[in-house]
Length: 214
Image (cartoon, rainbow, N blue to C red; front, side, top):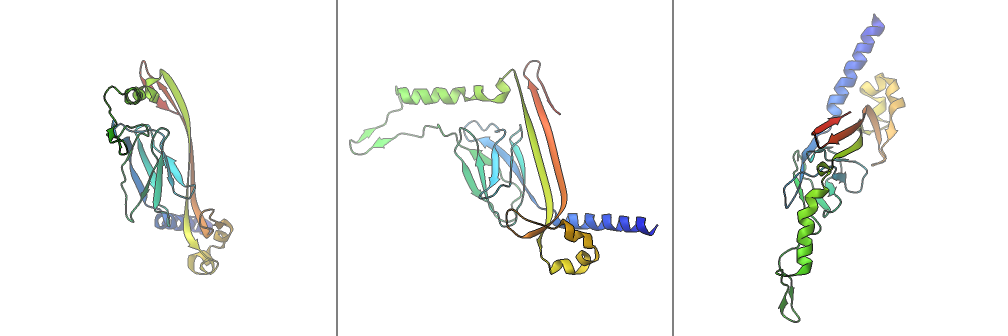
């Protein structure tokens, strides 16, 4: 009975540590700045690190907050990469990405004082057609498509030191010492509490419309 009570106590302790070590999240949606349509599979990553995620089929994302990291980069093929400095306490961050083939206004060539005309200009007409046909490049325009997704979330207690491991609850439960590891990001010691790995495959059919995730 003593052993069972001790097991329950250890589980309760781990739950307490997990709740105190849980990190805040930043969530939002990434859209096209011209069409305002959501962008799927946009790469979202903390600048200078390997931590990141991707948007889902609705253009939405969730990104765990990381101590010491406050610049997030959004990148997507065919769009201008955007890096945003995130203020402390930010929980929602919606982002618009600009296509890298957008034609902006008129171009004035000062030496000859000639205006770049957009009317009857083959280059402008060509770029306009590219933008108009961009919708055809969306995955949903295909009769079929599928993709695989792998996610790994690891939660740890930060700022673990040898001195801290000799005090309080850490000292009482000596097996914690065997779980301590070095962070590949900061080089500091951390105590992993939870690791969650998810693998899925999404299959889409246009007609009749069907979409499922396995």
